Image 1: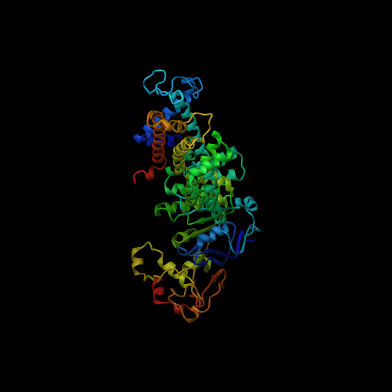
Image 2: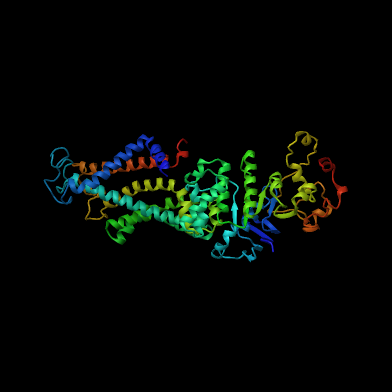
Length: 281
Length: 329
């Protein structure tokens, strides 16, 4: 296992862009973790004069918004929200997707039919509207946004897992396990899943990036959790002043862009490292 | 009482084009410590028969009796305790081992499924690794670090782990180099002597089966066309199809090979979706007559343990042998 691990790291490191992406993600994670030390007080508190431009006042390096709140503090705390939602939503989506896809492919027949129709049902609903509907029904809390994003983004993972399981289901090592009387659950989790996982992990890492965008969109529309700072919400708040103080939108916009880009780069790197045979196509 | 008894077993597949009878009314017995070779060309249903006996594919009719117990309609829970009596060796040494597990885990898997303690598993795995001639450090290594022959040894060790009474060998050497084949076959024979296990040895290659089998079963399009002792069949085939198979087997001596007139079968295996009327072999049979196209021959006893499904078998009518055959003998 150790040797496989070293191999994995080496293959990942060969992709420069992925390394840069990883570095950026680490920086964002670092900022998110360090937020309470960097800005010990509530980031939504009004600290100074409104609309101070960035790099003008050294106390507020990224300036203040229309209410006089410290943008740097809101960005740092926003990183926590964004990453947490992205990660949890991706885990939720992956769990649902793997469960549905694996069950459908392994048992086949009417189980497959039913689960795939169910998946298509979810695919046909426009994603953003679906998220907004769920959030407006459940309520404006960060947990509900996470669940909503997870519920909306699991379908591609289910389809991918199903395809992988289909290819592996009839392989001889699986038949050998059935011949020795191994239970279905153990075959699915212990035998097939580890072989099906690499491409699924890549897709899950991309779902994180997608979830960040969803969260921003929800917050931008004012349906996010009002008690936490979030990048999307900051953009939403700043949009009325876009002609005069455009930096209020631009700073969190840049943060979203860099984070999503970095996550995508990491996803590509994971793809190279986990599916080495596909890389040189 | 035979160890394994298969009675009129049928396996059907439903496809979009219709029903395929992959295995059609097959009966045979396997005694303890015996090796039965099952031969036939690709697509004749021999692997399906093996998997149906393992209950890996469902059978539509007939009975499978293992050690006096009918396993045909057992649930997977009931089967679990009987699995230890019957194991399988697979064809593809690359596909039959999970690349994510080390060899020790793979060999120990049947034991862990059967509920052995961790220490017992470790001891048994070490013993098996020695028994099949793998290097002692194999346990911690992964399948991709081994050659095809060694991987097949891992598969054999896994099949042996629970000390089964029957092992179904599904073309265990056809994916291996010729040089490695003999080693693996010898290993199987040694293991049979040591443990008294019975083999159902499936192969499309008669020269492989010849070495290891006590008895031979020849299948064509899902049905048995001939069965009997290996020696007898080898010396004097009774079914024209067996004769053709034998004629297709390579001969080591090039001078003999040159002198032998080859009787090459014409045409392809007919589609199992639409098997021919009458004898399923008559369209390709060099000795077919009018009756063969109308009436399906039943498998009947010709002498001793010899069974054949042909209206005009070659034992009865040696005069009918075409020239190709007399040149071959």
